[in-house]
Image (spheres, rainbow, N blue to C red):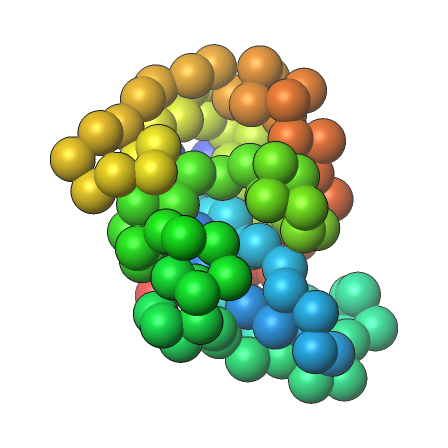
Length: 124
């Protein structure tokens, strides 16, 4: 969605592990937005896109849904950040546990992850 100065974009509350053309990917966006699946698929030339099940996430990455940090590069998978994240000075997220989280400057996170940044969200 185009960035709008009248909208408050929440920090990371939504991190999706999906399968794009049979390969895992990570999609990260503020919690008050959702992925525009059609736009995402068109933008990145993806034919098939589906969410991984909680069991697939546990089996493939050893993590529970809700505990996954936004660094797909560490997990060896492409990571996509929605551009709305850029409006956050800091972002917070869980770090492998449902009870442990951290806060980090967005710019530091972007430098660590080196995500693919795009405009692919819509308001819920």
